[in-house]
Image 1 (cartoon, rainbow, N blue to C red):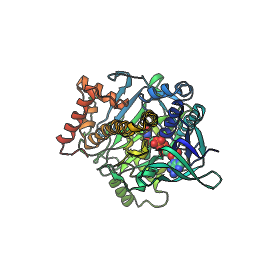
Image 2: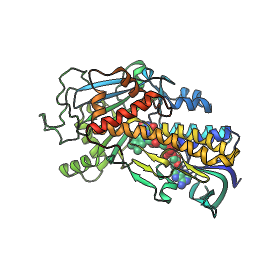
Image 3: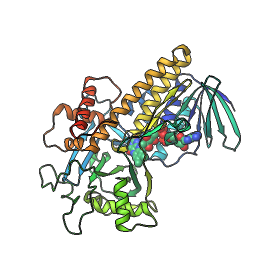
Image 4: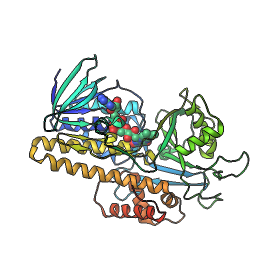
Length: 454
Ligand SMILES: Cc1cc2nc3c(=O)[nH]c(=O)nc-3n(C[C@H](O)[C@H](O)[C@H](O)COP(=O)(O)OP(=O)(O)OC[C@H]3O[C@@H](n4cnc5c(N)ncnc54)[C@H](O)[C@@H]3O)c2cc1C
């Protein structure tokens, strides 16, 4: 077994396996070290259309088409206003693809990792990287790992890619993570069967269901956060549009085999309030998931006849962070290892997939021309960071209120609607005029409510 390669990739999630597949396609010897044995569960089940450009380039698109449900749009529901709005990806400025995929991540990640193998990468599961090794000048020159049979092994490499996800191996080693202001959310989630779906192409849409974050509704009464008629169309009796009050929300992600992933994303304040108010003890995640369902008429309707397939709901908290340094001499960090944004717009896997592919191109170039490493990797870093920052702006404008108001406005400026659709499709890596305008609009939205981008 080799203990040296051109590139060592830490982690075999979407960021690591796409990067490794592309490096192998560039003819680079690549070792992927993945701590888990695949398949394994993972969050991040709704993809974006722009990732299909990468899937096609690395030669895995047909395999994905055969396995996974196609997602043609995103539906937003607001229980506080009694409104629903659908964004169809084919209405984007430059639709690279009309659809994305909804993917149970155990199957999806295993398929991508196998694809990296098929492209020529040396993939080793149940290997854990302990640290990146640097030389006397501080350049990354390999990793120290524990092999599948428990032996310590050093692997030398000309370049190291950190794709370790939210473990963020390199960032945590240097204390380079910072929280993103105002995104202290908790997600409570489980898989279901029997959740009703729309017909035809609409069956694969993601549903994002906003519900109130204020005090719970009085039984039988219209307290703050009380629902309007669920699923009502624009113009029908909205109770109170609570613009300004930060919404909690559900995701409903349908899979091809009939299962649906359901998650509630709630604020820390909501968690604290409901725990205290209801005296929740024991299985907190499941109890509070059920409380969230009871506070969202749309979620309650969708789950009415459905069966939870897991014994209990799971929870994960406080997931949003930036990383100050995402590259250096001989290394870079892709996907969640380089930062993570609230999952509102299903952006994480796309950032990992596209960032991973672009990283492979940059690293292959740097290996060919070492004198260009700094500029090539620096350009990669700037491009990937700009894409992520656009999504951060959108998420902040959403939680601050103005973007939600815009999504549900009766009259929408056609160009801005296209721009929002393009963002929802993941089109954040170009220097198109519409994208620059959209960043400005999002900044103006934040300024209009006195919220600074940050
Ligand atoms: C609540 C929630 C909901 C989400 N929903 C969505 C969604 O709908 N759509 C979407 O696109 N994204 C979503 N995401 C984000 C998504 O999960 C991630 O952005 C995505 O998985 C990032 O891919 P990655 O390859 O960077 O990291 P990962 O997928 O996390 O892969 C990292 C891999 O590295 C391995 N690893 C870690 N440390 C080591 C080590 N030391 N040695 C060896 N291997 C190691 C891990 O085992 C793992 O397999 C969501 C996230 C959260 C928290």
